[in-house]
Amino acid sequence: REHFKSLCRMASPQQTSSNTNMPSANLEAAAQKTYKSIVGYRAEIIHFLSDPIKGEDESYEHFEDGILLVDEGRVVACGAAEDVIRHFKGQAVTIEDRRPALIMPGFIDAHIHFPQIDMIGSHGEQLLEWLNKYTFPAEAKFQDSEYAAMAAEMFVKELLRSGTTTALAFCTVHEQSVDALFEEAEKRDMLMIAGKVLMDSPEFAPAELRMEAKESYEATKRLINRWHGKGRNLYAVTPRFAITSTFEQLELAGKLLKEHEGVYMHTHMNENKNEIALVKKIHNVDNYIDVYDKAGLLGPRSVLAHCVHMTDDDWGKMHRSGSSACHCPSSNLFLGSGLFAMQEARKHNVKVGLGTDVGAGTSFCQLSSLDDAYKVGQLHGDPLTPFSAFHLATLGTAESLSLEHKIGNFLPGKEADFLVLDLSSTPLLEYRMKLTTAIEEKLFLLSTLGDDRCVQQTFCHGKMQHDRDAVEKGNNSA
Image 1 (cartoon, rainbow, N blue to C red):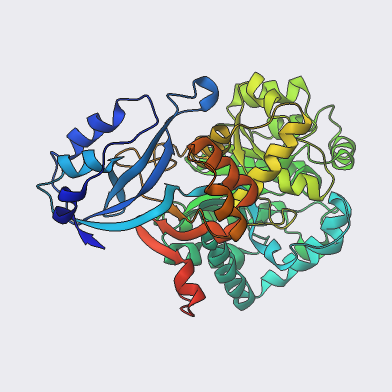
Image 2 (cartoon, one colour; image 1 turned 90 degrees about the vertical axis):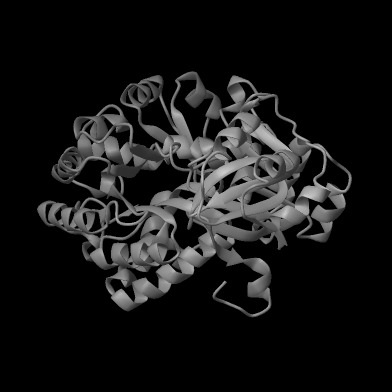
């Protein structure tokens, strides 16, 4: 930690690899304001301004020696160290020096299952068999409030340890599971979107996890009133998928969306061929998406996980409704479900987020998701570029959740969720990083050789909520 004025004498030359004039404009405007307690984090910094597909050079800002300024949980400005020091020399700023680390926005997970932390890594089944054999028995345990609270603490700590600062999460059918997750996220000042799972159909949902449609509707209303907009918590109406809900329950879910402005809808679609066949049989439809469309579940805050086996009609309905797809490469490979076609989503102008889908996904860390997403893209002849990959894990997923006005990059006023990443966290990564200076190659190495060990520190709303080195020294609260 260094006092700001002492750095004026040691400012290094401005180094940036983006072609934008945004930094100086933002710095000049920000420096005219007054602040309560600015902290600057000095390191190599990258964040994204737009989708690299639309123009790579203008899509990001990169500072080899940068400073991210934060005040009361929000971004003040971000720029080259020399520029920040020059513009803010009259302000009282405390500098936290994190060099030679890389700072970027926190990872955003657009599809994950909170209770499935109990059965992550379970062997050898495809989707429907896997749910019956592992998932449903694990979720039944969450009727116990103490058990749910214990699991929520572990779940949130693991997210933060893995660099995730925002998540869209399934809970279970039990109200207490939702309470437990929101309470734990609130302690850490995380942005958490979650909801009670809706299941009432005897066609597939086990009796111990079913709740009658009207009862679930009333329980969900209570939870929305209790949690939506409290702190950083947001609510998602969460029908598991079409085969575990009657159409009555799905229609009531649509009613909830109309009655409560700003809530999300979170479900699964077109993940597995046997699942799709069962949906068509139970609901007597030609296309899976028609069930959700008729129930009023599609819209700008609707997130449909997987979207692996899609038709042009499916993509068209998603585009017209503004619904988002969530790419879950680790899960789809683990369960043998299929390969998400990013190029098809782009062709139909459908927003896409990135999800770990724990517990079918086998890592909480989005670096591992990006590794798998690259390989899935290779099999389609359309591999993600390093810039597209990290845009997807940050601003791209924020946009898929309609949260780009709050999080996803370091523009002034955004909520300060960010990571300090150690580029030498393993001997192999350290060795390989020494052989490159290009930010594009550094990002690719992070996504292929990196994992949760790279996450040195995680900040939510400007406060450090995970410190790897402190944990390793025995301070388990860090």
